[in-house]
Image (cartoon, rainbow, N blue to C red; front, side, top):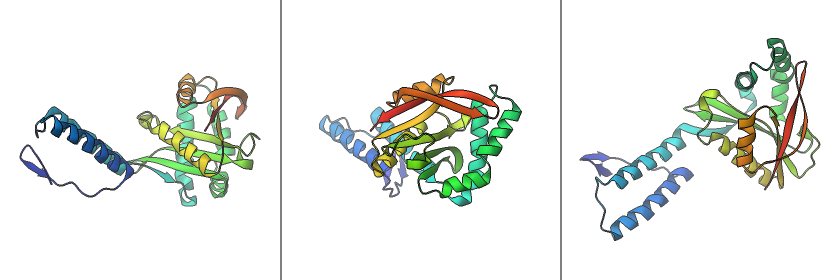
Length: 231
């Protein structure tokens, strides 16, 4: 138990990586406080520590990344269609969207992609709600013949209500971890040339523009920039 302003607070056991890191950080701060004889329950720093620990604990319980299974194909189709439409609305006609969804996001096609052993799919969940999803490809499942040293991030989308907050960076780190697991030395992706915020995000993650390829949406052919990162 901890006592804060006369109230006992029970701290439950939690051995997630986020919580353990928070506890390590607390220990270092507590050590400095004791050495400087500044340890008080009502100190501003103590309040900060409590808030920081709570935020980390809340994150470990409320936000998580889950592998997508074949039983999730309907949920995948819904988040895929919604996030794609929200990203590109105003740039394509409804007819083009319908054609693209029919060709790329029908459940039969999505199910075959989920079941392929060289593609990897993940949901990002917040309070058990699907906030975004990620699709990775290796070897022949890549959309361009980049070679066996590459892992492709084919799709990385978040619902507009959940964008930001470091969630995209967590997906990028997951891609890095998966690439290393399969002994890949590079990661690549395609990003729409007219999406400067996404391009800036990938640059901050260490990606560089190395080329371009066509992206077909219905009857429209757009250009995607190819960006790569060595790991």
